[in-house]
Amino acid sequence: MDSIKRWWLRVASVAAVAVAGVLVPAAAWAQSNPGVVAIGDELVRRRQPRGGFGLIGGCCCLLVILLVVLIVVLVNRRRRPQPPPPPPPGM
Figure 1: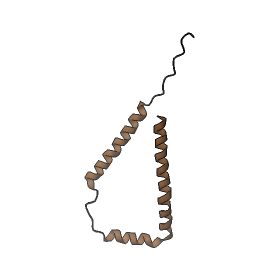
Figure 2: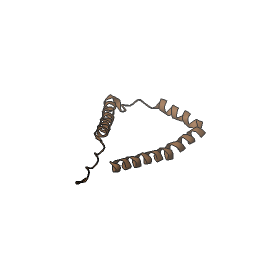
Figure 3: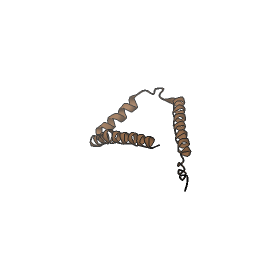
Figure 4: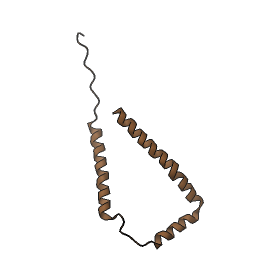
């Protein structure tokens, strides 16, 4: 289990670094250029509505998320501390 914990910690660290390295500078840049937000709003209004992800894609995504949560809960419930070793013979 230690290897799984270390692996999960590494994945979480990479995700945190990615958020800090990409999203924080992008948010700071957008804050310093308020005209960018207005341009984005105009582009969204001009765009024709398309099919998009839709109800079926949303349900599929929700099922995948629920499946992952269920697997994590089951794995956590099955973890039990190992019993202590028996005392050596002759004691």
